[in-house]
Image (cartoon, rainbow, N blue to C red):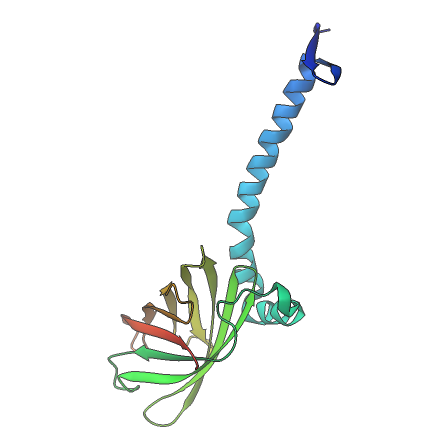
Length: 182
């Protein structure tokens, strides 16, 4: 058995063994590792396993007073593209859902021929300064890609880029803008 140690406080003496310190430090270390692991895994799991629909449900269940002011209310978007199937600039309403640092969007864009394509995206809000994630249309084998946008300090707009695979299976990228409706 390890010898007893005495630690003196103003309020008296506390007795403990050396193994108690070891157990305490081991518990702290395991807790720290578990916390880091949970933080790295939770966001991707939410996005991958449950995506837009689950984030949307969790957003609806979140009381208004607990919601973050970023990405609430009505927003407009404008995504730029060089394509034979879309206008150079595609402006329309984008619907946001948010749960904690996870954000999900829904919007409909029209092709030049008038076909309506439903898009979803989901991603993570990082330090309330960036939003990063993936976007896709609802058609199997359809359009998909990634995005990264900078959130303006005014919290009423975000600008950045999207990258994606075109219908011709080429990698494209261009500007993507989100603006809160006035």
